[in-house]
Amino acid sequence: RYRMRVYNDLFCRSLVLARSLDKHIWPIVRTSSNLVHITHVDSTVLRRDGMDSRFVAAFVAGGIAGACMSCTLLYRRDAEAAAAARNELGLAKTTSTSDRQVSTFTHMDDEIVREHFTRNIQFFGEKGQQRVARAFIVVIGLGGVGSHCAHMLLRSGVSRLRLVDFDQVSLSSLNRHAVATREDVGMSKAECLAAHFARIYPEACLDVCTAMYRKEAEEELLGGEPDFVIDCIDNIDTKVELLAACVRREIPVLACGGAGSKCDPTRIRIVDVAESVVDPLARAVRHRLKRDHGINGGIPVLLSTEKQRCDLVPVEAEDGKSLKDYQVLPNFRIRTIPVFGALPAIFGMAFAAHVVT
Image (cartoon, rainbow, N blue to C red; front, side, top):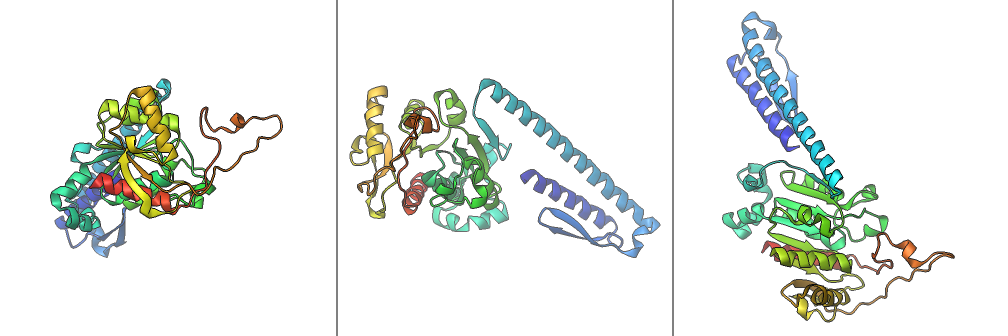
């Protein structure tokens, strides 16, 4: 989408150049969205002395069109080669909305982008918003908490996000997801967010990874020197491995406690993992980090001190089946917990505010 806008801009400039050569015969040109429309052609367009400008325009526009097609074909070839290499290595399915250099990816000089984030600029100042725009954030787990966190990071002007989740949007997740609709049911959560984000902030660079975090994919999911990692995973094994990897790589990370079965927004806190006593998920993670990795603290955790109001939903196995037959993945949770959608949303907003500020 970004490349097409650049190509159309170049094409429009060629039309203006040709029109300036012979303004009496050139059609009135109007640009609307990404399309160029010829709204009127003067009857003198066939005059002999007006042919020069038409030839110039055709030559310039044809050259640009050829360059556009070449760039697109080369980009597609490289993307297919990279995808084939990833498949051979068994790595996560990853796509990106942009192939631009991250170091120059700020866009704050663009008038539309500047107006888009004018309230942020007023709040943070020019240099502050530039730092926000240059940030590279990885969000792992894109359910109720992660989707709201990534959504608000994008609206805050973070220009590079890596969105990681192996799961799909389900009907039961619509009560807490930030942007998903019924039309998105069955779609990858990462791709769903990317599709909606492209309409909110099309200049942003989104790395879309449809994968569960695991040791084998650590470099792919945590590589690139991210400024911050947001852990919104609700599986203990995966969560512990991710947090240990961030500590080992010295990447700032913020972990999430349990947001299910709670409803009091005044009980939300950010504490060190060593202080996570009330929240069952954070408490289990603290124990495993100490036992398996020798990590006693130093990881901030966002949690609620409110006690859970509901128990896990019971699951009864059918005749001849065990509860393990209902697992989505090995060693993955089976029973679900009732969720009031407002709390995961508040968790996500608190994550974004902490990271950006």
